Length: 303
Image (tube, rainbow, N blue to C red; front, side):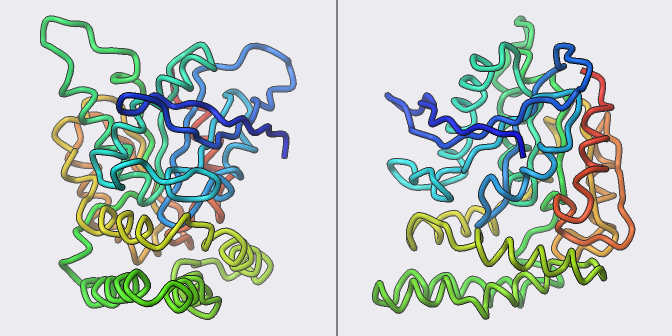
């Protein structure tokens, strides 16, 4: 893949936060200037690798993909990881990417990243005074991939969520060696991967499992992982729906068991300007199972 890494200083709090960021130039063979860039926000326990496949296939837009704080090569935020601290970080990240790219990015979030993206967009809109023109970042199209639309602590997945909650609690409370071994256990990681992958293609399925084996355990430490998990199960994109006035593209997998299609469709219907795109025979990992098609959707969106 044609990409380059740069460690950027993201404005955060009273200072900055060193962040690992990858830039993927637009693949447009004509050499013309790319359109509005995109900023891709990855999911829980992921890093930039997962969304790099979408970034790689973009032809008309430059893409920027960070490792979120607490994952990959970016350390946790000072003061802990909460929804608010993540939103403050994304504020600074958008500012930094705007400076680097010369234009405010279109922000795209997958799964846990969709929660952060939707809440960030809603907060950006709500901060705009009625007498002021909204900033460009507040009116840019928003893209949510496999958005988390249902409360994890309620509904049909609550038993699975409680089991995961116990797992991450144990991982954070056990002695360091035992807790880390539990959280990075390859058998458990493989079970998680099996639950999320929907493809019947044996080659693609093996590739997905290998990606999770390599990158699903690159979190910074046990406590920050537990904090991120808590954010992921306590919040949804629906909490932000009332403020999402910008055009929103919602991408879903028909076989997604983490973000069920019926609830996802209801969320999209609740928005004033939304398009729902559903991929058949795809689950929660649209970024692995349909990256080229998603890149085409992103390229086709009007700036």
